[in-house]
Image (cartoon, rainbow, N blue to C red; front, side, top):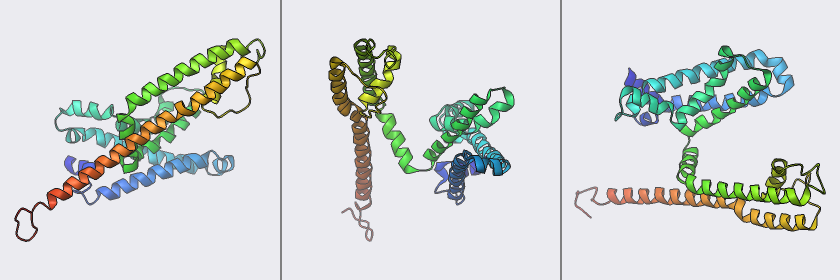
Length: 270
């Protein structure tokens, strides 16, 4: 029984259980419908007219996701056969996909155990959108993105750290250059961070801008630096995608070579 359930819900049973793909298709459909319901619920006329239906559908999805989550915990020792029963369950619970499964249902249960104000309840409702990351288990594209992001995390971390240093330096410099002329726009270094982000990313909303000569000069330099610096994460991820695709193609070529090493008719080595 336990093994059959594992083959039904886990990716390993895709070729071993005929119901596996149907189950995955059902979960994918439920995730997409859940996200659609969250979006539609934000419209006041729809929420006022169909609030009971939205709530019933939310209960239905939470029950399904909760059962799936506990079944995955129960069968974790089959997913991680090298670990003990409780070690395997802990491994799944704290895995990225395990945490996503937990976050997908947790906002529904928390208000039953704790008293929150309206603002925090709204935040919990927003967290429900993280259910979309459950698709990572079922789609190759999201899996590829996750793998690339994980492998390039060190390079991305260094880039983000350099960006933070540049933001901090530019905010500090601009505060001392502009605070006397525009005290309401540059009241402190923390508030100046907004100007630095808008300038470094070359967005330039125009709500905060420099007026002094030195301020304009520094703004130009920071904007030019931002063009290259902001593009770095994109280049890192692009290189990671290319590496993954080439690795996949190489494995495919090697697999084909192994298949055609022997004649399919006589069995002799080619």
